[in-house]
Image 1 (cartoon, rainbow, N blue to C red):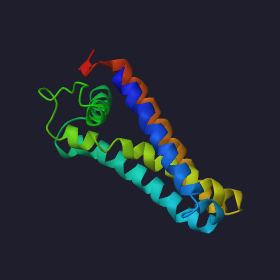
Image 2: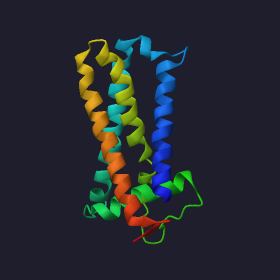
Image 3: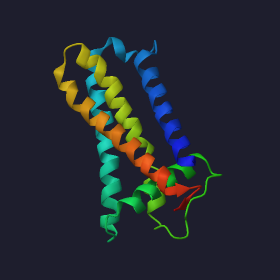
Image 4: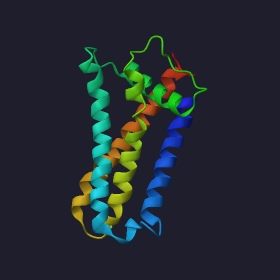
Length: 160
């Protein structure tokens, strides 16, 4: 299950990057809750933008939105991008699906950044941080849910 492993790797790397930015002595956003709000908003914006691009791309190319095909294709592209030994269906996928699919890790990265940076601000009493935190949690949920479906629908790069 290459998709499941790569998804776990992306979530772990996103979490470690967020912890590094929040707790690093040189950056240390944790000690500056007001500075965390723009970082949280930026993370939520990245996650929403990538989701919007991935939904709009097939429509822009005149294809109908069909979840099983597109979700699996995006996650197979992400898995192939990180692990070249993992197969990707280049021959029967649209040419635009691979470059768009390589943006998929930004959904998790943006969601984790929104939650991790928004939490110290929310804890300090800045209630406006609840909006990007919620968007980040939804983005992480969409990413994990889509990855589970893509992992169930594919085996080593082949759609079942």
